[in-house]
Image (tube, rainbow, N blue to C red; front, side):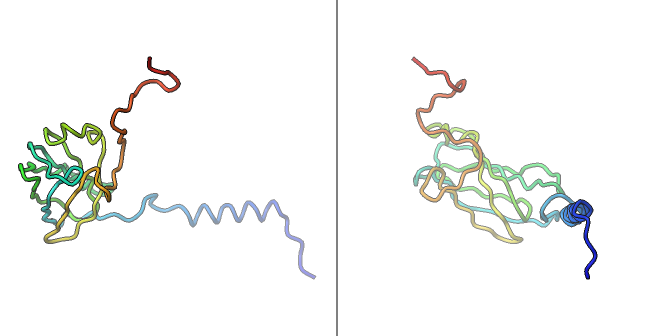
Length: 150
């Protein structure tokens, strides 16, 4: 005959085991190296070159690598070129080239870069755009929730 198991003791033991296995460094693995990645590409807004000038910023910081962002000027034809670090980079855009797309001001993009040369084209607000952060529809009214504007 098998011994009777105390259900409370079993539940406490199982819960402890789950917490012990689930606890680690608390974050997924990230690239912490200072290996350089060269990046170039073209920035489009709704399929047209981002003209008028501006700045593109790549931020390779993460929980293991605290560094400053790398920036480059956006040329009149929408092209840019810069050097950053490998791994995940948060990408932001600013400047006059966004004047007709103000909803891009608070949004970011994300890309994974490898060592050597990387080609990263962005079609902001295009069909395959993958924004992160707030993008409000054109004409949206912001304010307190529940209030109607008259």
